[in-house]
Amino acid sequence: MFGGFVFMHLIKRGQVYYFNRWVVGRVLRFSLKTNDRYRAIAVSARVGKKVSRWELYLDYKEIKQRALQEAQKAHADWLTDHFNGVDLEVGNHDLPESPYDSEYEADSAAMGVVQERLTKGTLLPDEVEIALSDLLYYALKRQTLEGWNQPKNLLESMKGGSFRDVRTSDEPFNALVEDFIEGRRLKNPGTKASTHQEYVDHVNEFWLLMNKPALSAVDNDLADQYLKNIQQLPKHSNSAKYKGKSPLHLISMDLPQSDRLSGTSINNRISHLSSYCEWLIRQGKISSDPFSGMTVVLKDKQPYAPFSHEDIKRILSSKLYNHSHPKFITGNRRSNWWLILIAVFSGMRLAEITQLTVDDLREEDGVYFFSINREEGKTVKNKNAERAVPVHSFLLDLGLLEYASYLRKENIDMLLPNLLSDRKKPGDGSSRWFNEKYRSSEFPDFVVEKKVFHSFRKTFFTTCSNKDPSVSYRAVLQEVVGHENQKAKELGSSATYMGGFELPLKAKAVELFTFDGIDHVRDRLKGKANWRQLKLP
Image (cartoon, rainbow, N blue to C red):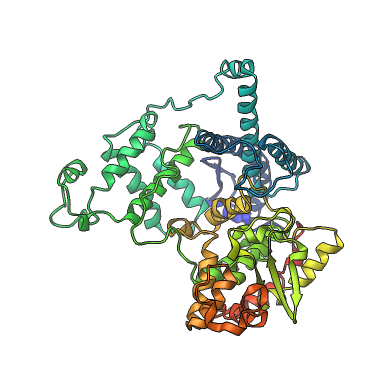
C-alpha cells in the first residue's frame, strides 16, 4: 500500500513517531502524535507527498541558480578563447564544414533544440540543469555579440547590475559544516562515519590554516593561497617530529618533499572543500565555489584511472540497469542504457559513440561492426580513428540489432537519439551527464579516484592486452581502438580491410574483453533489466 520510502522518513522517539526528512538543506522533523505504527505510516505518506511537491518547486529554483553559474563559467571560457584568437566563424580551415554560416546561427539552432525539449518535458530530472545551463550559455553569448554590434545594448546591459554578489555573511567559514554533514548522512546513509568526518576535518583545517576567515572572505585569492600552503604540510602530522606544531609553524619548517602531503591527498581536500562550497551556494551563503576546477597535477600518474572489473559490474547494476529501482522504467533513457554498454565493450571514444547513426551499424563477411567515419559531417580525431570496430557478442546478445531495427521503423537516424546536446564538441553533453551527474550521484568514489567516462576505453584496451600480450594481437587492438599502429606491418597479409586487419581477426580481439561474472550480468540485462522496459528513447 505504501512505498518503501515512507519508512525512511519515520523515526520513533520514546513511544511517539516523528516525520523526519531532509528538505532543501534542512532537517524537517515533527511529531505525528501517535504511537500506532500503521497510522504513522499513513500520515507520513500523505505528508511526504505534499513535501515532495514543495521540494520539487524549491529544487527547480536551486537548479536555475546552479545552471546560471555554470553558464557564466562557460561564457567566460568562450570569451577567453575568442580573445586568444579563436574565430567566431564556424567555417574555418581547422574545423569540418558546418551547415551554418556563423556561430550565431549555430547557437540559434542549438537553442531551438534545447527549448523544444524543455517545453515538451522530454528531459529527465538529472538532464534539466545541464539543458538550462546550455540555454543560458547561448543567451549570454547572444547578449555579448549583440552588445558588440549595438553599443547601445551594451550600455543598457550594464545598468541593471545583473550579477549580484550574495556573499554578505560574516559567519565563520566552518560554521555550517555540521549542517552540511547532516545532509550527507541522510542522503548517503551507507557512507562510513570516517568519510563524513574527513569533510569536517578538512573544512576545519582550511579555516585554521587560513586564519579563521568568514564566509564572505573566502574567494579565489584565498583558495589559491591555501593551495600553496597545503603543499607545505606533512602527510603524517601526528608523527613525533611534527605532532603539536601549528599549521603555520609547519609551513615555516620547509619540510622535505618526501614528508609532504601527496597530490592525491591534496586533491581530496580540495574536492571536499568544493563540495561544501557547492552546498553553501545552494543555501544562498556564497555566490561561487572558489575551489571549482582547482587541482594538483599528480606526477607520474594518468589524469584518469581505468575502471576495475568490479567497477564495471557495479556500474552495470546501478539504477540505469537495476529493474528494482523505483524509477528504472520511467527515469532512464534507452540511449544512455546502450551508451555505457557500447563504451564498455568496444573501447570507442565517447565522441565516436555519440555520432553513430543507425546506418553505421553494418555487416560484412558475417561480422557486425560499427563504422567510424566522416560521413554526413561527422568528425573523427585523426586518420587512424576512421575504422571498423566489430560488435562484441555481449551487445548482440542484449538485442542491439533488434534495437537498431526498432529505430529504423521509427525513422530515427541516430543510433543513440535524445542524448544531451553538445556545447562545444561531439560527446560533450553525454560527458557532462555521466561525469557530473550520474557518476557523482551513483559513484562519488569515482570522482576522488579520477575515473571518468574515458576510463571505459582504457579498461577495454588493458583487459584485452592482458588476455593476449603478444605483439601481433596488440597491433590488432591498436587498430580496433584507433591508436596509431606502428607494428601492423608485422602481420603483413592480414592487413586488408580499410588498409588494416581483417574483420574476423579484429572480432577475435574484441572478444578478448571479458570478466568474471559476465554471464550473470548478461542474463540479468537480458531479463527484467533489458532496454525494452525503458519508456524514454
